[in-house]
Amino acid sequence: MNISLAQLPKGQAELTVELTPEELEPYLKKAATNISQATKIPGFRPGTAPYEVVKVNVGEMTIYQEAAHLAIRKTLFSAIREKNLKVINEPKIDIIKLAPGNPFIYKAQVIILPEVKIGDYSKIKIKKKEVKVENDEIEKILKNFQEIFAKEVLSDQEAKSGDRLEIDFEVSLDKVVIDGGKQTNYSVIIGQGQMIPGFEEKLIGLKKGEEKEFQLKFPAEYQNNFLAGKTADFKVKINNIYNRELPEINDELAQKLGTATTLTEFKEKIKADLLKDKQTKEDRRTEQEMFEEIIKISEFGEIPDLLVNNEVDKMLEEFRQGIEANGIDFNQYLQNIKKTTDNLKLDFAGQALTRIKASLILQTVVNEKNIAVSEEEVNQEINHLIEEHQLTSEQKEKINSAEYRHYLENALRQQKALEELKKELIS
Image 1 (cartoon, helix red, strand yellow):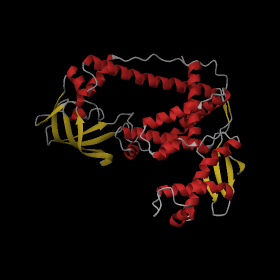
Image 2 (cartoon, rainbow, N blue to C red):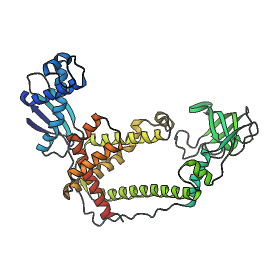
Image 3 (cartoon, helix red, strand yellow):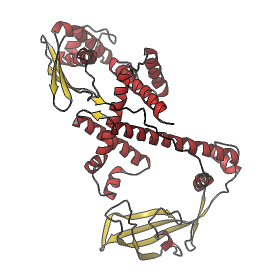
């Protein structure tokens, strides 16, 4: 196997790997076996068809393409180790030559770990804030559970606070209905504050079938910058009114939720969950502050644009998942805040750079402290993943591959480095 290395601008490098036809031969045989296992070939049991028979049935280039995939998986990280590269991304692969009777050649473009000089962080001391749960926080959670079991009765009386209404409404600026400002049979509970201030109060006293027009000013800090601070015209029609009866907050309510037998026990569980959530948030805050302080006293080599862009894309996907987890359509959300995905990417750029630098610091600490992870620890983590998730055979094979084990080993090293830093700097 012949390996050559070319340095590229912005912290990148390109490996060229060449395998002779003889070196590719074992991968061709393995590829043919894999294909014969996955493809029904008349007269042969899965995985037993000879190479020539497989070639006739699926075509020789299909075998070569599978062999190339196998060869890259086997040789790439060997090439990276041979050239002593500290790679921090999934390599971008381009197949240069793949043809019967010829050498197999591929290129791998990688991002190299930038040089990092960490300052003396021994004097950095981050203090944790005390976290506690107040009674009103527990009561707020209990009231939310009350809402779940509320009984509703259709009413022909005037709407009052606490009633749930189904309404049609329009919101206009300068006699033009705003984007997303027209809703049909929209559900709103008077007094819960889900609409802008003053809206729900305007519905009190109305009956089914009645309509009302009024003006309201959007809050100056409204999430949609286009509407913030502006006065809009509202037109509302009442379709249905429901009186709501909330259950008492008692043992029976706790039992309905199936997590406790008494209200006292249920309150303790709520308190424990809230405390755990607050502790997690405080851990994240102190961790972020720790990295910000270390970054201030450290020097970093050129950070590749590709690395920043990848981190921004990752953050955008995390943000999208968070929005959709709350039942909100992401595209509608973007329309409401008058932004595009490109606008959000620009917003995330600074935070992405901080996250990258934090990762580089951890990797540097791993190297400087020579933090090691045993094969047993990697195996335990892999077994944990297999037990926790219902993985297919293909997924199990992937997480047991040399590439994934290498990734997992480095991730575990960085986790150890993080715990060491926190132990030294956070109290």
